[in-house]
Amino acid sequence: MSLTKFSFASSVLGATATINVLVPDGESGPHSVLYLHHGLGDTFETFSQATDIEGHARGLNIMVVMPDAGDGWFCNDPRPGGLAWEDHLAVELVDVIDAKFPTIANRNARGLAGFSMGGYGAMMLGLTHPGRFSAISTHAGSFAFGHALRPDRPERSEFMRAVAPPGGRYDLWQLAKNLTADTLPVAIRFDVGTDDHLLRYNREFHAWLEELGVPHKYDEVAGGHAWDYVNRQLPLTLDFMSKHLSRVRPDDP
Image (cartoon, rainbow, N blue to C red; front, side):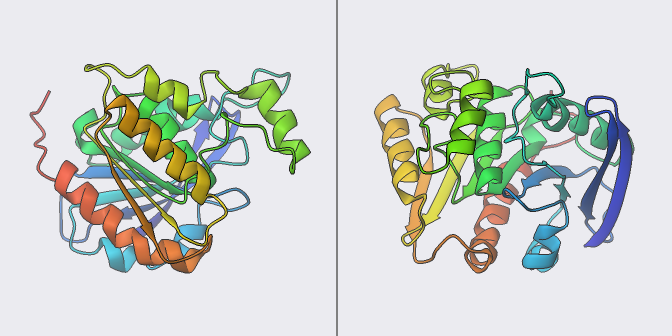
């Protein structure tokens, strides 16, 4: 895999967006694409620094795009000066990647994954934009965001009240409830560590998907909310994406 740092002028953010892109060596493409999202407080470089993503992805005909997702929880912030992270990451970024790299430019060849805040973002964007993405895999997703206020984190609750109130368009429970046969993702998986503080909401979201009859795979494994856990679980995400994305051909609709 070759790691490339790529920048472009984002008209949505009104700033330069910089991302890391892993491109398969010796493969001319076109490639399926995995959009891999970092957690709160991290950057587009964190996966390359904190995990062996290059080694894990070696040998797969999958391009891995690691964007900077800021700290806006992947939401469009309607407040004055707020940034439209959803529009940037689900629409603008995808269009730029398809224009600049040899990708298979359809939903069946695009997957989403992430850790913590990025796990929430991957699940939310996948359920919100079924016409753009078909597979979702998350590690210790912060699924309470947009669904339950956090009294222990007043600044988080204040942000949610303004941008992502419980029961609104960024609530994963509501998004899952709104799924139809036409908008159901092709494949969903998520995992969480048994010592992770986010275990409760991952369990509850798993139970909710089961109640709704939404097909998915859910795992609880040993570990806490840490990058060593993510590094151990990343091969599962890449294998999952390889199975669901790599068989797609360029002439698919």
